[in-house]
Length: 162
Image (cartoon, rainbow, N blue to C red):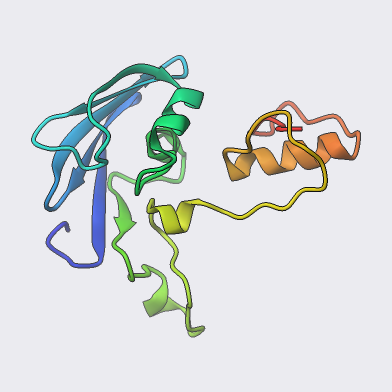
């Protein structure tokens, strides 16, 4: 799959708390996680271009990667691998490719299906100063509920930034 120009990263789950991340020209690395701590180890190269990272938390993982081509990649990959709907192989599209284009009649002016910076960073406008920097779109719903004074359900992912 990595020989296809449309594929940038191929991610292979290897255990319930680990995976391999492969890139055509940048080799592969392993990612492991346990109790909200993440370890990224380049093996034949560094597909995410972040170097060795041992036992870092979600906040540190975000801060480490936010200015790279793959912001929040460590946490996002771990969540993708553990998602019930994910398969045996997870692909991230290369720049200017859209995995959906063949199946949808609507022309796309952006892309979908990648961990690249252009796909991961979402503009956010809010009318109050956040207590912490917004990090993930999953934090938007708990924050909106907090702004409305509504309790966040226990089964909702994300943490309010307000």
